Amino acid sequence: DQQVKQNSPSLSVQEGRISILNCDYTNSMFDYFLWYKKYPAEGPTFLISISSIKDKNEDGRFTVFLNKSAKHLSLHIVPSQPGDSAVYFCAASAQGQGAQKLVFGQGTRLTINP
Amino acid sequence: DTGVSQNPRHKITKRGQNVTFRCDPISEHNRLYWYRQTLGQGPEFLTYFQNEAQLEKSRLLSDRFSAERPKGSFSTLEIQRTEQGDSAMYLCASSPQGQGAYGYTFGSGTRLTVV
Image (tube, rainbow over all chains, first blue to last red; front, side, top):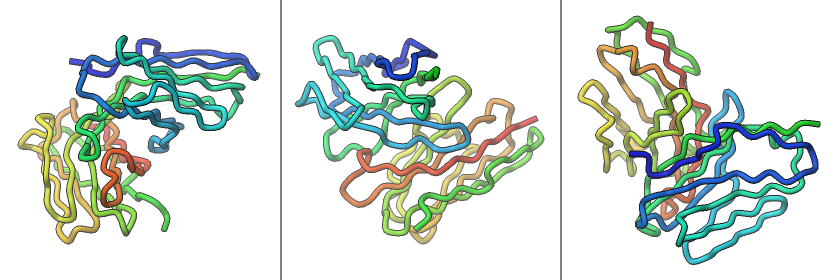
């Protein structure tokens, strides 16, 4: 069963506009959520995270929103830049500070067009 | 520190052969994790170590898979009698004490192709 789902395999956005990547989860025990960015031939790199006690976290051009009632989170990138073109993974963990493993979504390939 | 290092970067093997991958974590990180990523999917958890102790194994880790971290530093992942379904990217991550899933640094992975 896919506990974390990213239903859009790909997304194309014009440079300078907003990119919105979506993620849904089914496990109500998840209490921490992370977004990773992955370039080809590299491992995933951490981008931004959010705890379930918050509904928004912002870091520069990146903002993550969490809607616990809908079990949905989204990553907003504004303004989008060509260097943002990559695969983005949503991930979730349970059990608070004791969490060791992450459950990942399938990823969304973001392409920023000049 | 150069981050998490994985070797080899690519491995092509014939079905039925054994393969071994190595992961060198960030030196001060005591936790080390293995994940597998197949085409079109996100990484899936396989196992993790705290120092030299293997504390959790996924049901994905069949009896053909074995992982070790003998001195609490580098780790090896061995796959015996490889099958075509083992073709995937094998990712290693390490994390410092107390951060667990919140503090991962991933390596660049080993891409395995079983022919």
